[in-house]
Length: 363
Image (cartoon, rainbow, N blue to C red; front, top):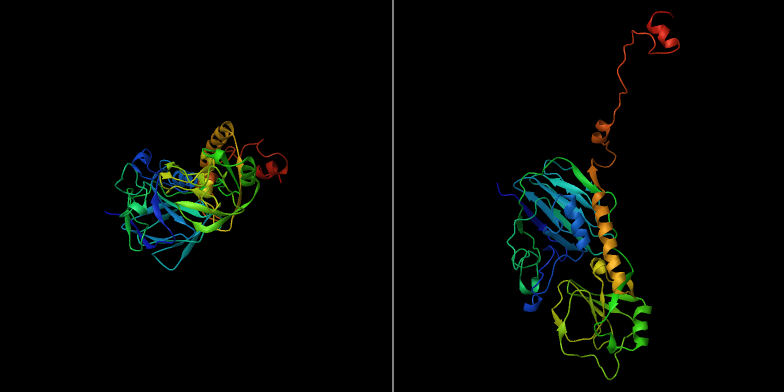
C-alpha cells in the first residue's frame, strides 16, 4: 500500500533537506542542505534513521501534515511543539519538543510556531522515497533541484515514505538536546582580511550586530556600524570562490553572512568565515537577534569541532522511551526486581516477632 505524508499547510519556507550537494561548486551548483545540521542529525536518530536522511525543514512556522494510507512515525526536532489530532475522534495530544509521534491513517500533526530559533525539522522513520538530483534530495528552489518538483513544499503535496509500518509501538524523546541558539559566532579571518585596517577588523569583532529582516537560506544581512575597506583596496574584487559561512562586506559596509543556498562565487571582500561547528547556529538566527563575532585560530576551530561531535553523541545517547506526560514507565517498572524471594509462611524463622506467633497460632 502506498503510504504518503500529505502537506495540508506548508508553513513558512518548508522544504526537503539532507546533507546537501557536495562536490558540485565547480559547476556553479550551491551546496544547499540543512540549515541546522545538528538538529537534523538528532531528529533522524530520534526515529532510527541515518544521520543525514532527508527531512522536512521548516522556518519560523511549521506545517500541518496528515498520514494517508497507513501509519507513519515522525520525529520533531527543534524547540517547537505540535498538536496530534486523531482521525478516530476529536481528541488531540500535545507533542513536546524533540519527541517522536506515530500518526495513524488520517491523523493530523499541526506544528506550532518556533519558540526559540528559526529552524525545525520533521524526520520520518525510514525516510522519504525520493529520487536524488546530483547525489542529494535537498531542495534548491532557485534552480528547481531536488525535493518535490524542485520547489518549497506546497499545500496538497504528497510525499511517499519508505516505511509502511513503524518498527515498534514505543515513542522516543531526546532528554538532553543540544542548544543551537547563541549570541556569539566564532570566525576565522580571511581570505581578504588584508582589505581592512586593524582598526576596522577590531571594529568588526568588538560590536554587536543586529540580524536584519533580510534573512533566508541564501544569506543573512546584518545591521551595525559600517565596516569600510582600505581606500587603495576598495569594495570590489575579481570574483572568487565562496562557501556557506563566508562573511562578505559590500559597498554598504554592512556585512552579509552567506548561507547554505549561497552562490558559489562572489566579488566582495570577505573579512572572515564562520567556523564549521558554528554553521548550525546561523540556521537559528531570527530578525532582531543581536550577535557578536569572535576571531579564533585554526587550532581553536578544530577543538570546537571535536567538542561538538562529543556533544552530538551525548544528545543522541540521551534518547529514551517516552510514555507520555505523567504516564508510568511500565518498561522500567517491569525491569525492576520487585520480589526479593518467595517464603513459606508456615515455616518458623521467616517472620520474627509476634507475626511468627500469629502464623503458628501462638497468639
